[in-house]
Image (cartoon, rainbow over all chains, first blue to last red):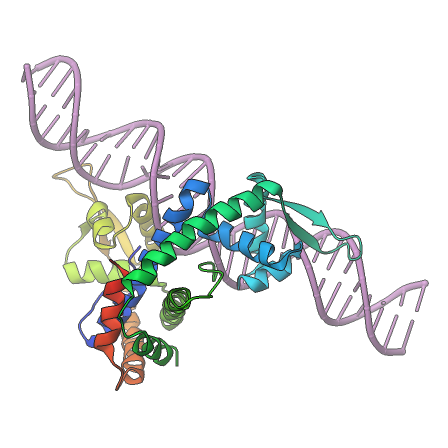
Amino acid sequence: MNKIFPCQEREADRIVYALVHAAHELERRYDEALLPEGLTAAKFAALCKLVQAGRALGLGELAEQLTCVRSNITQLVDRLESDGLVVRVVDPADRRTVRAQVTELGMKRHTEGSKHVEELLEAISTSLKGQDLAAFENVLSALLM
Amino acid sequence: MNKIFPCQEREADRIVYALVHAAHELERRYDEALLPEGLTAAKFAALCKLVQAGRALGLGELAEQLTCVRSNITQLVDRLESDGLVVRVVDPADRRTVRAQVTELGMKRHTEGSKHVEELLEAISTSLKGQDLAAFENVLSALLM
DNA sequence: AAGATTTTGTTCATATATGAATAATGCAGG
DNA sequence: CCTGCATTATTCATATATGAACAAAATCTT
């Protein structure tokens, strides 16, 4: 939903609205790029972190890497597991921790998904040619203060 | 979740990541501003559209104004109704359409919420002083092409 | 007028996210 | 060693969002 900032009278309103709108649009394109692999942004992000780590991460670690709460990861790993992309492995050393281990299928989907994301980023990169990105990043920084 | 763009190697990656991150942060601050009124961004946006319209809008109209699907509005109006901020009114002229009518409490919450949002936008406006907003908007436009 | 189509809202299944409460396990200090 | 505290994941309730399937009502077509 385009929920935020229903009025856009002054400049700040317009800027913030445009920013949020652009972010949502990019997220949509990102999901769209992953759709052919049966992935979503959330699933792909988790796979990326696991592949990057090169080992089975505890769900808490994963939550930290993805900056979200643990209960979210519990559900996400449920879905990834039912897709056959990861398996839960109990750590024998600490029987509280459950690790997510990427399966072979998970690896494959990650590789394919990466290609699609790569294409998307190429396209974005191209359309950003000649833009004043430094000014852009300055505004983003200013916004977060 | 900070799901999108798990790698930030090239410039485009960094830009897009920063953009999405900033948007989420702004949404968080927006929700935070509305929290004292017991509102959320979604609820407030719906109230805004209804107040702006100055009449009871059909749920389909509301969905269109908020750029989301109808089933979303059904649920949102359920919650608004159980908060006592709107009531559903059946249109006698077309018995299919259900209109959302803002209650007195809804008006009050909208007014109070608007003040908080106003403050947030003031703060943002201040922190954007002296920034190159034209360049910023150019980059946003370029991104959406 | 009867039948087909469109419009409208709801319901259901699903995905994503949060936060509170809970259960199981591990650990530190007495 | 036990007791209390911390950590870990899960469950539950909730909010937001989508899209498919549905039911009721209105409209169009013949």
